[in-house]
Structure formats: structure tokens, C-alpha cells
Length: 271
Image (cartoon, rainbow, N blue to C red; front, side, top):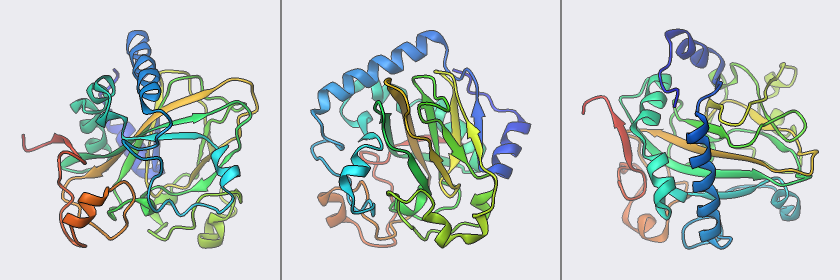
């Protein structure tokens, strides 16, 4: 794993709100990530979350049939698959996230498999952090390509620097590719940057960076494994998202999100 970041890479991430890292995984690591994903998906039996089919409060477009053909989405695979747990709880990933965003500690918010099936719809421009149960401008995600992500099969696109000006207002993600620009009209004429990646490469992006993806115009799959990271010390903002009934009953707005069974601390500078 290419886990060391240069000063220039960190500065580029902080300026643009995203960073592509080529050849992040070596051949053996890529094979293990693919094996873990295949096993985890098989064991899920179609559930998006451990023990349930839906993620609460997605705020998506009402056209469910369209959204269901954007990608298959499975979350928190680390909670019910030991191979995925060994991948996601790797301290090196936490340190990379901490170095990029300037946090002292990093917790997993959720991992997420995103699989564009053959002929899948595009992923409209959107933000990530407004969906989550905390509000932190430093929050970020890693996106690891397990197949080549190309212009033809649904590679990511980013609007550089947008994370400096977006807020936690959530216009949602659905059929309208550009609905986000009704909320953030100053980016309507911005130039986007494509991020095609070879399998085994990755990107990091800030949760407030505007991003989206092409449709899959091929008969093949575009698999990616991602993980959202929460800087340690964040508190509950009232948005349910991944939290289950027991956790919602236990906490109130303003409480620390520090349950290691749900959001494990994978890196801390103080340790």
C-alpha cells in the first residue's frame, strides 16, 4: 500500500478538495480487496446495512427505479466480514486521512461498496457530508478502484475547490444531474476534472467537494470500495443516516459520536 503522502500532495488535496493516488495497492493487495468484497457481498444477501435493507434518511429523489440503477450500495461491510474489517481498520488509512484533513484522530463513519452494473445510470453531482450524522468541514472519503474506472464505465468527476464554499445544505442526489447548482449557483459555470483510475489506484475527497460520476456505458462492472472518515471529537447533529435504533435511543443531539462498535477510532496522533 502506498500510504505515505508528500507535502505537495497534502497541499494539493487541501486546495482542490480531492487527490488521486496512482498504484495505491499492489497486485496482491488488490486481489485481497476484491476477494473480501466478493465474500462480503455474498454474505449480505442483498442487505445494504448489517441486518437491514435501507440506509435511513438518504434524502434521495423519489424515482426509486432510476436511483436503484445508479449503483449497488452496501455499507459497513467491516462489521460483518473479517477480511473487510482487516482492510478498513488499517491504521495506515486513518493516518492518511488525518494527514490530509489535519485531524488529530480519525474514526470510520462507514465503509461503502459502490458497484456500477452494466449500463448503469450516472451519479449526479452531490455532496457527502450533509447526509451524515455530524457536521465537520474536514470529513473525507477514500475511493479505491477495484476495476479500471474509465470515461466509459463511470469514473469520478470533481469540481476543484468547491469544498471551500459549499455548506451542509443537502440538495440530494437523484435524476437531475445538475440539481446541486440550484443550491450552489456559483459553481454552475465551473470546470470539472475527471479522475479515471486504474484498478488499485484511489482518490481521497473532502465530503463537501462537489463530485459525480459518468453512466456505465459498457457491459462490464465498475467496482469501487470506499470509506467515509469522521475526525474524532464530533457530535451528533440529529441526522440518523447509518445509526441504528439502539444508538438513536441512546444519544441526543450534541453527544459525542465515540461508540467504537459503530464508529471505531482507527488512528490517533496521541497514541
